Image (cartoon, rainbow over all chains, first blue to last red; front, side, top):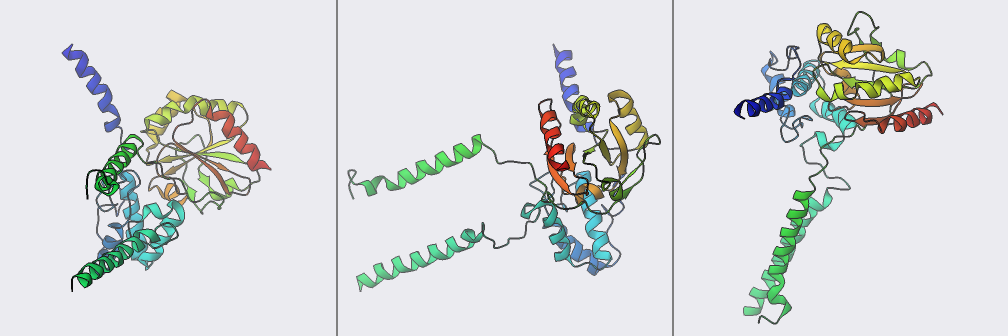
Amino acid sequence: MKALFLMFALFFAMPLAAQDALPPAPYAYRQLDDPAQEAKAQALMESLRCLKCQGQSIADSDAPMAGDMRHQVRLRIASGEAPEHIRAWLIERYGDYVSYAPKISATTWPLFAVPVLLLCIVVMVLLRRLGGRR
Amino acid sequence: MSAGSWKFWLPLAIFAGFCLLVFVQLMHPAEREVASAMIGKPLPAFDLRAAVPERPGLATVDLKDGKPRLLNIWASWCIPCAAEAPQLEALRQQGVEIVGVAIRDTPEDVTGFLARYGNPYARLGADDLSEVQLGIGSSGVPETFVIDGAGVIRYQHIGDIREDDVPMLIARLKEAAR
C-alpha cells in the first residue's frame, strides 16, 4: 500500500520536474552594469505581471518565462528604451492585465470615483448630524 | 429602531449578501487564461534557427506566402503538448500545414519528442528566449494560432487541442482563407 502511494506520489511529482533544460536567459538573473539603468529596469519589472504565476511580478518569479521577460526588459532599457514604452509594448500583446500599474480607464474609473463619493457622503452626514446638535 | 423595522435588519442583510458574493466567487474562480491582444494584427518580425536538422527554421516571411496555417507554440518538456500530438497529426492528414515554435528547448529533447509522438510540422523554429512567444502575446504552452496568408494572427487557441477542437480549427482556417 505504501509502495503504491509512493508510486502515485512520484507519478504526480513528474510534471514539476518537467522544466526546460535550457539555462536561463543571459539577463534573467544578471543585473545591468549601469546602476541607474538597473534601477529603472527593476522598478518596471516589479510592476509587470508574470503570466505563468499570475500573483507574482516578473521580478519575483523564477518561472523561465519570467526570466525571459526580465531579459527583454533589461536589454531594452540598456538600449535606451523608455520603461513606459516597454510597458505599452507588453500591454499591446497581453492587455492591461500584464501591468500592475493602476490606470484610469472606462472600466476602472469607478474604483477611483467610489472612495471620493463615499467620502463626500460621510462629510455630508457628519455636517448634518453635528450641525443639528448645535 | 425595533426588530420590526427593516432598517434593523439591513446590516445583517448586507453581510449576508457579502457572504453570498464571496461564496459564489469562490465556486467560480476567475478565468486564469490570458488571451492575446494580437488577434487581427500582423505577426512581429522574427527569424528562428531550425530546432532540428530535418526541418527548416521559421521566419515571418515564411508565413506571408498567401497560405493560411497553424502556428503551434509548444515544448518537449510540456506534458499537454504530448497529449495534443494525435490531434496535430489528424490536422496534418487533413491537409493543414502546421509550423511549430519550440520554446526553450534543446535539439536532443525535440528530436526525442518527435520520435516518440510524431512530427506534424512543416517548419520548426527554436525560440530560446521566448521572443516569439512574447511577441505574439502567448502566455504558455501549448497554444495554437491561426495565421492567414498575409501573416495576420486570426485566432488563438489556448491549451492542448482536443478531438472536438479539430473541426473548429479547420473552420477557422477556412475563414482565414477567405
